[in-house]
Each structure stands twice: as structure tokens, then as C-alpha cells.
Length: 405
Image 1 (cartoon, helix red, strand yellow):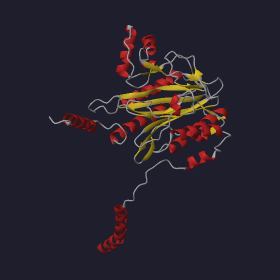
Image 2 (cartoon, helix red, strand yellow):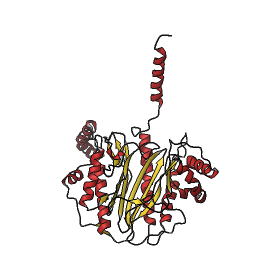
Image 3 (cartoon, helix red, strand yellow):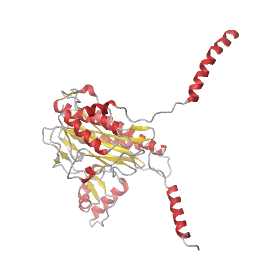
């Protein structure tokens, strides 16, 4: 055998393997379709939860409405696909009220209820075949419009979201968006919540390596890594504004939302822990889940050892000072070859927000004045010429009709 022939065959084999590897980004229309279907269900789930948020209603019931809706609707799609397509909850429904920042998805015995004027944040996600669309929306309980602090945080979150979708284009930089969040917050006299991260989304990955920090944080190394957005990437843009200092503390409420750490391994000692972890692997895969989705009594007991040995990561319930309020908006966007497409997240009803503040920053005004990134369409000369030909033929056709008559 000639020298180097073995290495040559290995290189050719590796190249073939790369060719055979299925495309898992949005350059594939099938992937785009799955993202869009997940986003459609997520938006409808948000709407269903919003309808369930009523004075005197229980928070846990609203959470269950979202999760049930997602499971019901994902159960209707891709059922004939082979190989089997996994689908379901990409992020469990969390309903956080007033000064609670997020991740509040209580167990079934929780007695928390909604009161008139509460500022309610709904956060959830849906995945189809591992392609996840997440969304969050904030509403006021009752018919009265948001005023004062509630209006300020809501409007700041809305304006920041409008800027973010315009800045999300190939070649754009993450640090520019981080700067923008603070500029908007300053105009509305509120604070960006520290520690909130917007992530790149990939198949079976809800928290990708590319991260957009909500605020420059010297203690968080992730907020210092600079990068540019690229075509065919997907992002979850997560915006949280607070009337407080933007430095929330952990709430005494027990964590109920967890996610399996796909890289950690450990031989669990307790039988209950092994049963819980087996359930997690089988039913939830790489996506977050709520304890409510399993046997709560066994889950509470078995999750401890999993958490201690880093087999799962917890999502702590965070809170601002009592009396402060927090607004949350989240959307999913695709950076496609034809432009940036926001596929999940609901529109804010501006008629229900009455704030004394407005955008003053000139940089923010310029961003809002720009269009969302779209590829310029090439003129189709054939169609244009056909229209001209049709226009010329029209008078003749009319003449022929008269002659026939």
C-alpha cells in the first residue's frame, strides 16, 4: 500500500460523513417549518394562559393551562413522520406576579391567586423535533390600563424588544444590543434586570454558546464575550425590566423548574433518585421541565440527589423588593437568507399602557426608525414584461369581443 493512502481514505470517509450529516439549521426549509409550527403553538398557548388570568384565579391553574395546551397541540402534529419526531414542552409555563422576576411554576397545592392590577409575566416554550420556540408576555389583571411603575417597565420592555428585532441581523454585535437595553431603561426611569441572558437556539439546545447579556456584568464572564450574528442562526431575545434596582434575590419559594445537564454523569445511590432521573431522561430530554409534570411527592424527594451531583440544573425563583414590579418580553427570531423573522412573541397592546415617559435617546430613535432586516427582492423582469404584454392584448381582446357580438 502506498504511503499516505490510508490517511487519504480516512479523509475521504470523514468528508462523506460530513456530507451525509443532516442539516440542522434554518438553511433547510424543513427546519424552518418546525420552528414556525413550534412558534405558532407557543403564541396560541400564551393567548390561552392570558385568557385564564382572572381576578381570584389560581396561579398554578394558569400554569397548567399553558402546559396542557402545548401537550395537546404538539400531540396533533408530525404523528406520521418516520423516524419518530419528539415534541412537546420546550420550557414549562411559568407565571410570575408583580415583583417575582421569573421561573414561578408552583406545585399543585400552591394557593397563590391573582388580584386586580397585578402585573403578570407568562413565560413558556414549545419544541418540535428539538427545534424550540420560546416566548414571554406581560399583562395587567383586570380591565384598567397600566399606569405608574407598571406602565414604565412594560413600555421599556416593549421598546427594547422593538429595537432588538431591528438590530438582530448578520454582522450585528451583541454588545450593541446590551448597550441598547440600558439606554431604553434609562429613558423610562427603570432598570434592566441583571443576569438575564438572551441565547442562540440550536437543535435540542435552549441555551446556546452565543449569549447577549441584558446588562454588562463584571461578575459574569458570559457578558464579556463579544461576537457577531450570522445568517441561519436562531435567537431567543429575553428582556426583563424592573422598577427596582435590577438585582433580584432568590425567593424563598422552592425551585420547581429543572433541566438535565447533558454532560454530567453520576451513579445515583438512592432508588428514588434513580427512578426520578430515569423519568427525566425518558420524558424531558434536553429541555426544562416542572416538578408538576411528574409524581410530585416522589419528585421532591428524588430530585435532591440529582441536583446535588449536578445531573440537573435548577431555575431559581428570583424576586425584586416587595412593592416593585417587573415586566418580561421574550421572542424567537430566525436570521434567514431573506431577512430576520420574528416567529414567536405577542404584540403589546399600547392602548392599555399610560406612561409619562418616552424615548429621548437619539440612538434609540434612529434604531426604531430603521426597518427590520429584509433581503432586497430582485425584480422579476419576466413577470413585468408579461404584465406589459397582457396590457397590450387587453384592448385587442375587447375589440374581438365586439366583433363577435
